[in-house]
Image (cartoon, rainbow, N blue to C red; front, side, top):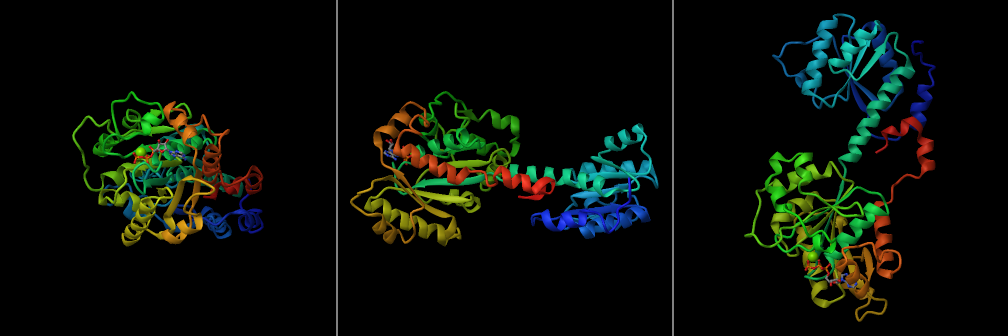
Length: 416
Ligand SMILES: Nc1ncnc2c1ncn2[C@@H]1O[C@H](COP(=O)(O)OP(=O)(O)OP(=O)(O)O)[C@@H](O)[C@H]1O
Ligand SMILES: [Mg+2]
């Protein structure tokens, strides 16, 4: 293994291949002079890592919080030298691992005996780097952290798409269930539909999932004890792969939930999915504003009727007044007909914005899909199915082609 010099290929690689993203922050603890010099060279050359600070002693006492010591926000990586005092280094690793589990700890040492490596790993280190540090060794270890961060970011980034009708019966539930099934099956995207109707929600019925015990309002009420296991007891699985959290069946008294509970619930749900489609009851209800503020898109589903179009204008005004950015508001024209009484141009003039998507009017096909609980039945052989399929593609198509991925190589791990 050779120590890194200014001529390492890393320099060229880092300049050319790394997409702009937030660099990984690094804190070093008790590194010897040479290793510190190597690390400094590495971080100066690589824009995807940023050296935050060097700490010159092992702090093993509990008097100070770990984050006060290593810095807040916690660094992505701690390079911890074990050579000065192995026992203290292991205790430091344990403390950092306990208090800042997202920080990756790299043990650095000139010793390479298997039992010492195992001990370091047991104390919470995820990498064991042997001195003298080598650029490839360091690059690979950092790449693994970058890869995990990317995975986590992707996981935590479910897009929340809210759907609300301009008036009753505009087709919200038909769209949410069909779009959700298409995203799940045709595009292999992990998708969840949440029916937030306080009673008589139709999403479960349209998916043919009529037997269930728990519903969305109970989930929100239990948000404080929500974990993956509890969530599973609420989730119904459709054969397309779409998950659904259904609405109350309408046999219970009306319910409401504590402020903040809805947002907290969705923060949790976002961790497990790529897309969450919300079937929201229509009406301008402050209870849902918090959720809409944090969502990625609010889709107002309308039909080409005067009363519905008037409501689109009211809803848009209401959302904008409540600080929801106009570019997140989309208008979906359902039951679209080529030669409708009101033309598309007239509609856009009335609502003061472009129609984002048009879904073809085909009553028989939609009715057949929702009556059979099979939203994909008409997907490929009807105009309405095709328009939904195209829409699902526009939402869920994965951004990078295989060729692009190949070109980015290992350093593409930082892409977001
Ligand atoms: N693209 C379409 N073409 C023809 N008919 C449609 C279309 N989309 C929905 N429909 C029909 O409109 C009716 C209402 O649809 P849906 O239940 O999805 O509306 P909704 O907005 O969820 O209603 P609610 O306000 O009761 O929740 C259903 O009978 C459905 O078959
Ligand atoms: Mg509905």
